[in-house]
Length: 146
Length: 200
Image 1: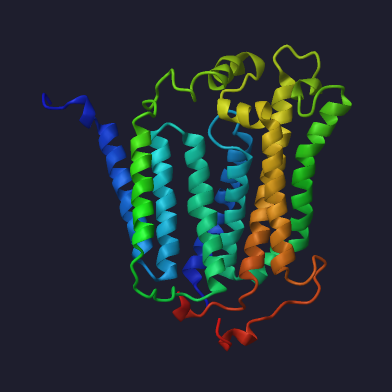
Image 2: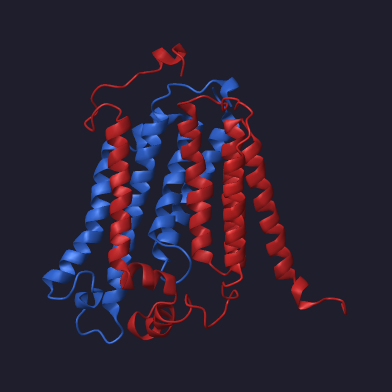
């Protein structure tokens, strides 16, 4: 199965999709978006790659082992932020403790950015993990099956 | 222009069109036996819901619905469909008067309940007073962040969101355990495509 047009188009789309995911991720405090949406968009870029180049190629670019680690890192970023605020003497996830003497609640900004990044990493890697595991079971998709 | 009553403003027309299309897509999904068509229709359903959420000014929810509902769910359903048959088994035609009566009674009760619902955008509605009002009033001073949704999600209700992240993580782990392609370290490949002829 060799679809030249699909391959070229998906190559052109890959970087803009990743860029958009990063925009949604880090602009979530100012506009619609956040970690959940960004993680899904990030995963979609790789799913598009898998559709056009085959799952094996995508797995070479982003192996399952890396995704497994990313899943853990994502959740640890979130819960780690909560742990840090507790170690600083505040309640769990009270971000104001991160920058104690700030007059404009800078701690809230830092905390939310880190936490949303954790959500984004966890969602993206989990979605790709599920996709890998579902799609990886069928060796080839016959043309008639569509 | 004179006959343009407030009831038929463009917003109402758009809402009516979207809701009508939602119903049509839902009926088409129910009637189709071709699983590929059903998956595609469910993607369209999600996209229409996202458009409807935009018209309700809930852009964050619309964004999530478009990305998760129309995007990733469709892909995962397609991937799941590959593991099973393409066509739902033809159902034996049978009437279930009790089920029909139960559904009709439930539907009538729900329609009756909507009479008591507050009007859309009502400032005194329970959803807009109490804690919702507190969030809107206090975010500007406590979490100076333009998007109140993010402030509520990540800060006021940060513990909830941590639980949601945990749920997603658990889902990933569960799929890995159930459908695992060998071990995480890249062990043996599971190849169960050989016994495809055996019925499934």
